[in-house]
Length: 421
Image (tube, rainbow, N blue to C red; front, side):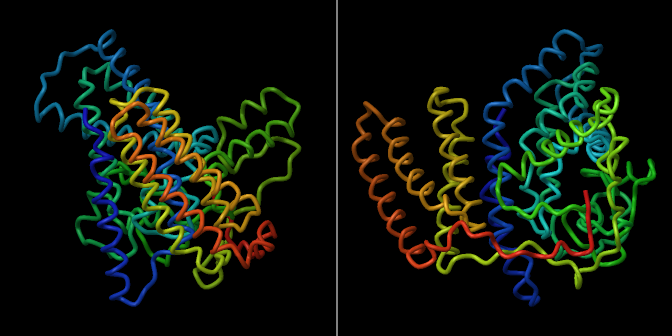
């Protein structure tokens, strides 16, 4: 089955460009570079992780389909439409529990940690969410939904949800009663108390209406987490709530309470711990976003690096079935080092520049590893070395003056009055 997400990457960026253009025409700002880079980091992190996880996920689904299905459904449009509806309702169940069960929330929380709302946020995904959602979809294999129909329906559901992550589309009238829309999904990302844990649908919003979780958009939405992440580090964004769970579990001596930490909701605390503060009213005028300043000249450097990294990560996604495993692992390692460097630059960390220079050296080594013994090896390595040298000189020039300041703690920002999950 084709990697539909990889095929859609150019269209994602085209639509994000159109969103920026439309926002400028309206005189509003919907993107910040640091937040958008963090969104892309999370999306790249997940998709590169899926290069290795997807085979196991598909094998698990296929095994259940081949050994436990109760029906032999024919291939064709009716089976695909059935799969699409069933994927949608099962997604609702997974999504709702991902807000109500800590272990699932730990994997899903990354999608909610942006304090902006734009199309880039749609790409901000948790690397572990495909694993947490798999058990919810296995009943489709038992029913007899073929793997290809399931994979296509899941891809359509994922791609549909991209366009609803925007502030530029208002309410859509009667459509709001059936389909998930930007208005409905803005509510889902809000930390306003009335918006918490509402509107879980993927394509259809009817499940929210049937099961009592629907909330229409009213007051202006404030986005993010009730307890803000305050970080652009991609690894922290992906895994920080697992550390929070470990802290809660270690704070209680009873095994039963430790297990409850995993299955209770994010607001639950073990006996003996101080209860978490209740969410308070928030508004865009009082909430202060995490927005540390960038070093002068860093923005264009990051934009170029993001373009190179997105192209490289997309190439890995395209070639995931063609490249040998060692080359896939080497390419993925370079991507992860790149993402870590972005987080360091955005937060002014002392180690960011040395890591960047080491990454550029690794880039040359990877080019040699990928093309070793081929006719194009020498020119490819030479071109990569030249590119790396130019980027290294650029990085050093950008940090010539602020180099002594790297590693200082970024400016403190008030968390605002909101604390969300």
